[in-house]
Length: 209
Image 1 (cartoon, rainbow, N blue to C red):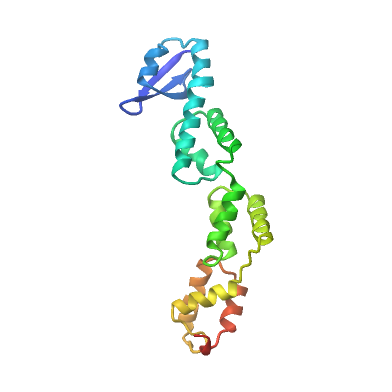
Image 2 (cartoon, helix red, strand yellow):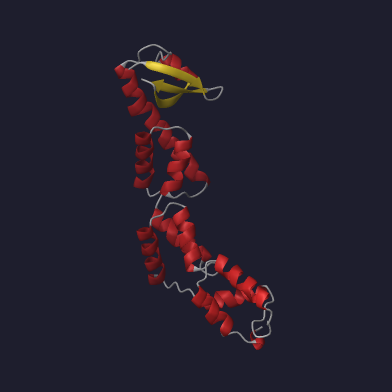
């Protein structure tokens, strides 16, 4: 294995390329330890040590440190590790490691997210948010089922009415078409369906305020 390039990433770390392809990032002390220099061969046993011992341990510790600060989905954690230039196989080892201790759990994350936002966001908006965090549709659906089994219930029409109360909007008295369109657009951006919006606004009366 020929080391074809070593480029400085920071004062303490460098990117190493083997046979013209990016391989990994090491600290400069490790470059010296494993005799890694441009134009020289990397010994097979040193490469094996780096890939099987040095980097897996480092990636697992990095994942653990990240999870101490906040909760991540699997996709989010993978992205953070990719930003650290860990090789793909090392990233998957780290994810498998923390998942084994249930430090990451997409289903738990989704259920918690639904519970936290159930009274402020529509189902569609919640699902869009979770998909944006890299959670699969199947996991999201399972999360809704778990949430319902634990007594969760979402009334979107009541949520819409509450939002309109906060905006001091009275559907029974509002006759300006443009204002009504603005309200429809506002609620649609919140993720509510046209049917839910029509039912909520159509069912509102001034004495509801």
